[in-house]
Length: 63
View 1 (cartoon, rainbow, N blue to C red):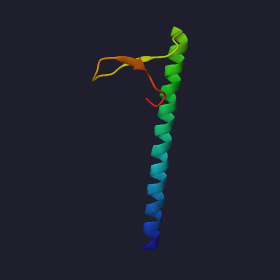
View 2: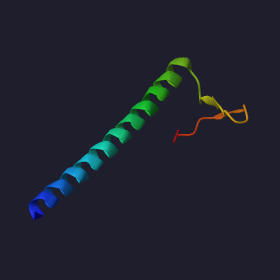
View 3: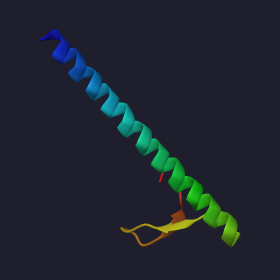
């Protein structure tokens, strides 16, 4: 019984780390693509439209 719980715990921990790693990799890839797009267009920053107010603002790094 202990072995089953131990391996189930290992599998859950591995699954959690893989999800965390892939989420971080996707976030970095999105940021890199945005930087390449800004470099190609010569833009300094990117504006995004706020859906509630309709105003434009600079995109933050965490978006």
